[in-house]
Image 1 (cartoon, rainbow, N blue to C red):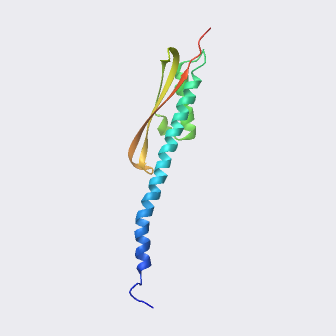
Image 2: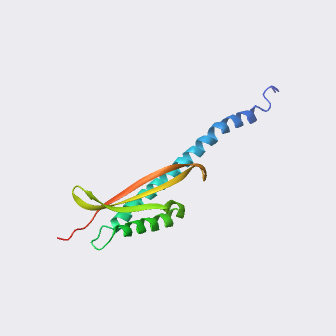
Image 3: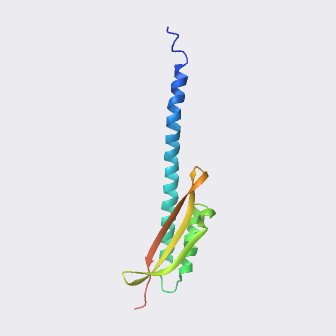
Length: 126
């Protein structure tokens, strides 16, 4: 039995974990940021569709988007939601804009700013 390799498994384990743990944590963080971005985009689009009917106003869009963000993510992501009328291809439309920040290091650390928009064409009277 060779005595010069005693303890080498511990060193190998530590070296592999030093590479593997940050890689796995980075993948998890990327998944979190993409999940928040996709959820905010879906909420903005659904909010814009809420202001598409004739009798609705852009405030209805912002309220609907805020409700969706609060129920699917957290209140802190629903702090900066705006809705306004616009035109798309010469027709009336509504745009909902959501700005939020996702912590870059798990639930703490510096934030990654997200700015998403959702559009919908408004109904017009014939």
